[in-house]
Length: 272
Image (tube, rainbow, N blue to C red; front, side, top):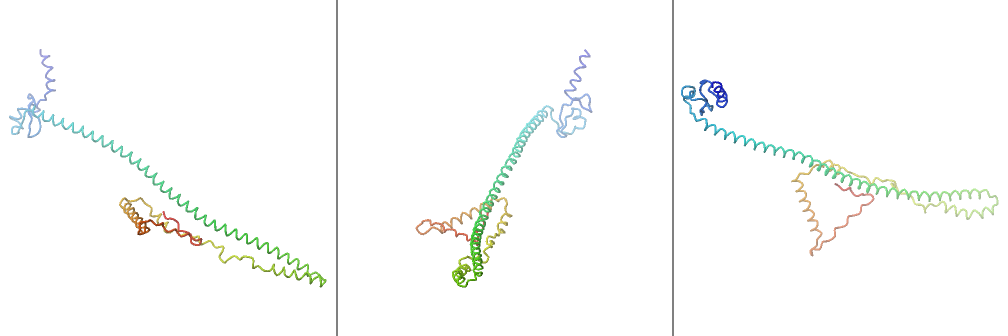
């Protein structure tokens, strides 16, 4: 009997704590003033005799509800944090992808600039090459004419020397008349062109890229406000030009042709 009665005591003690001060008293009330559970003796005689107390069961339900609400709130917060973390992870992936895409677009724009510069370089150097070849061909052709003239002159000199050796006066005089005419014709260079002064110069194809270099140094990313303002201004300027080329009848007149660039004044490179 005594052994059976000894078992419930520790179980009961585990279920309901005993008062530290009144060891035989169960903690069965709740001190609202101090926010702690206590025993009836503490309320009647002890430290909580002047305090407001409530039945422990009612406070238990209230606190259990508060704790349940707190747990639910934390679970909700955890779910929101998980959602935010997922958004952050997705944002990180999007940033990397957007960065790669923008770098690709920037590289493509630079490649277009490189291509345009290469095209302009080809066009401009071809102009120099064309005049260079034209002038060199003319110089070679003129040189051949002078070579031919020199050969003819040398022949006349040889014939003159041979005639000078003729001792028979009558024969000498017979040969001299036509020879002198040939020498006179051969000594004339009126039919041979002469190269103008400065013909070899090619510096009329000089370039000045200071303005373009300054523009290249100013290359940067566009700002939305400035981009819109520049586009609006450009559109307005284009509209004014179109209106200026429209007569009173409303017929659009063709734009004036661009003046051809003279060899001495090569057209300025397009600014990109």
